[in-house]
Image (cartoon, rainbow, N blue to C red):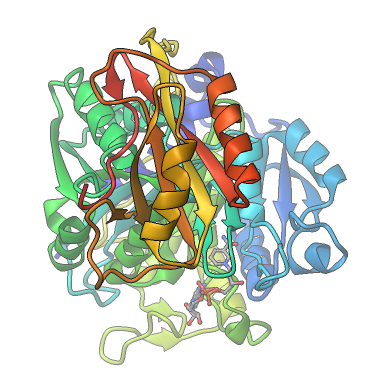
Length: 520
Ligand code: NAD
């Protein structure tokens, strides 16, 4: 089966073009090659941890031999920085480099377990507003073994929100909590990006994965915005799958999908699945795109067990770097290096992770793989389709209408007060009921989301924190205020109860902006 490498090229482009200026694009769209004396582009480079330094050296070797004109600003990130006490894994001064170059080629890092360390990737993506993570996953059949020879999927992962907001708390002895945040502007940006991407590269369909049958407000918003924006792109087919069955279908029949957009966590997991079933996680690169900044990396981690052995496959980072080269206007170099890489893959020169007896010809280490690609510079693949980087979109894909915040009327109608409690729930209800005032009543108590009062079941397992809902009677048409809520908290405290958290209950144009308790 021939692989559509043209699609690969398109995929690469999709992530890249966002921050191009129009004049720059028109410059690299000229049919003439870039001037030989074109100046070097400043980029920030980090060698990372584990296999990071080896694959970065290999990647830079190939692209520089191909003619990349780079002014490299090397920064230290990762484990060493964490262990020096920089909790985000990066020296504050290194952010200055990123702020000035606005292009970051980053090798994977090791995030030490526990100890309150923040993920550098998440911090960088969020600090620089890199909201779109573009992960092309396609097969290189018949040269890299895959059960899915026709696979050609682009995962467009939301990069800043969802459970990756990193807001976690230990509430009580029993309970840890992680907040899942989905915002309208964040979702509008990523969903529109997915459709713009599909349109720019002649893709036929955008699929959305959510779990909105369970998370009706958060994933429900993502799905709703997907439907709203899809309606503006009548030339592109759209569909929605519940993420569990969608994931099963993606793993089984990836050729059924084209562009798939999803919230952060699902996208993180499923892009690894997609890359692995296409051939290897070691093969996929990704672009993290924002309005004014971009970061390019491999999708895999630092694989510490493989470090320092000249074993790792540099292809993921290399393909990320190809996207970077197009992004910075060195599309001719990207094309030359990418075609040499395809030829190397086609010639069966493979690292251990993709090596298969009977398919591969030569098992090589990281350095030897890079040398093999360099030897093939100027060549094109004969079976796989060669890439052609002359068809990039002529405008940034990040262009979008200004966000218009809704003018719905927001009214406070009560509060969920989370109270530490280990005794029987009826005893808690008896203590709380007399404390309700100002028109509010104790409407229900839930434990781990499940209603346990009134009318709970003895069998329901409970932990040491209960959510106690104080609200105005539904449909009363009235609202309450913060003084009433503060007074309620005062009475709760005076009664010897400990509240660990409060969430306001708001109606929006009369519609509840909160979920009911399970079983309510
Ligand atoms: P991993 O992706 O690093 O490695 C998993 C396995 O995949 C490895 O044992 C190896 O067999 C294989 N593999 C991955 N990349 C390969 C390559 N280029 N060539 C050949 N084989 C490859 O995942 P992990 O072991 O879960 O994570 C290790 C560390 O990486 C953790 O500290 C994690 O936090 C970090 N991580 C970093 C990033 C990043 O920096 N972008 C991403 C994911 C994980």
